[in-house]
Image 1: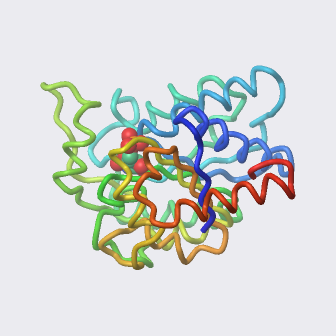
Image 2: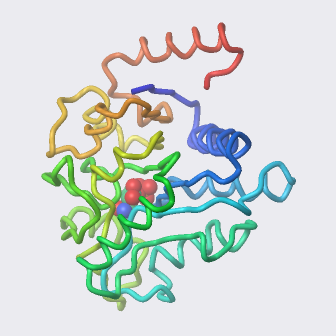
Length: 261
Ligand code: GLP
């Protein structure tokens, strides 16, 4: 697992976007795994800007989102489909039929199997972008999720429901269930890149990077991935025991390569 410590949430987003752009420049028909939550919004803003400047195209790109609420129609303002349209898809040259988000409206078991098949038929995910829940969840794989799980329905923890309640107004019914790629599905991606910013994520970052691999902390499964990149700001990195080592690796990389990444 490679840990990059960036000076600010903005720098986290910029570095994350740079990784996506490099991939798309090398492989214009790449398959991207996308995430929702507040963290990747600034990364998506960078991608939009770079598209507008003509530096990158999404014309051949296919995307697979991690998750979707169950019982919410795609047109619902709080659906992850609406989120992705608003934060990214409506502003880039991606073909709508190439964007995939699990459907929260059909039979979850059939939808889950079909979603796994679609990822497989696309040749697998080249780069999976991830955020991090305060309890260590990735996608909606809550603590005690099987580390080899595949796409399926999950019941959200009350903590996650509370954390995400800021997106729902008081009179809106907030879903308690979601369909999510499994941890095994995420680990199958050729590269994974997790972004986290802010002091509220510091404990989760420490457990993910330095804790034991445990279903109690789903993100710790990324320790088993051969190409996992973690980009965090100084606040999210503040509890890492080996922080000086990660910074040292960073400066050595800069010295040898002329860039952090
Ligand atoms: C939701 C999403 C996760 C995301 C998490 C963190 O629960 N299902 O994929 O990582 O939120 O969100 P934020 O980036 O807003 O902290």
